[in-house]
Image 1 (cartoon, rainbow, N blue to C red):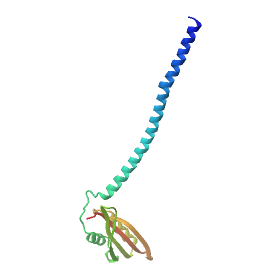
Image 2: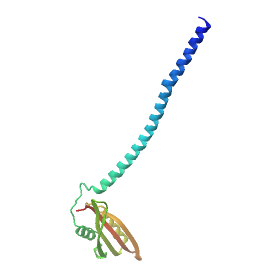
Image 3: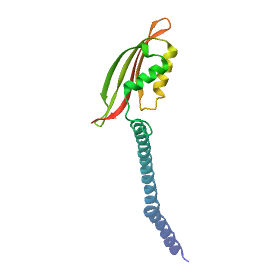
Image 4: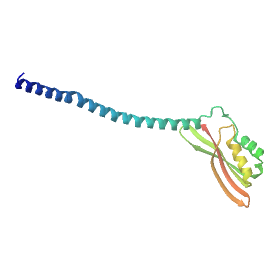
Length: 164
């Protein structure tokens, strides 16, 4: 083999190397980089979807009272809890409250004012409300000291209803 042939073969090898780099390796690296960017974006979108799913499930759980009574009277429920805790005589006033939550649901309930109540009885009353089988919740609680050992309390109990 002559030097000229060796140069041609070497030049062909270098040309083949550059062609492989240009048309195989560089596009592969670019494609890999693009796929990594897309994967990062999809992971971000997936985490957003998971966050929205969690938020949806929390809201659905709040609105879905499966296994709980949906038709009940606030007044009779309140009277039952107040009698069992011995706070009926401390109830000063009951005021109906209602607020829209969305176009399909509204929050309805009672604002109850109690005066001259002991902390132990208040705790039993609030525990009775929280442990009730009906779909109710305490949405607002204001406690003020009235006299030594006695409290003035405003508690708002609510439930969620569909707008008719």
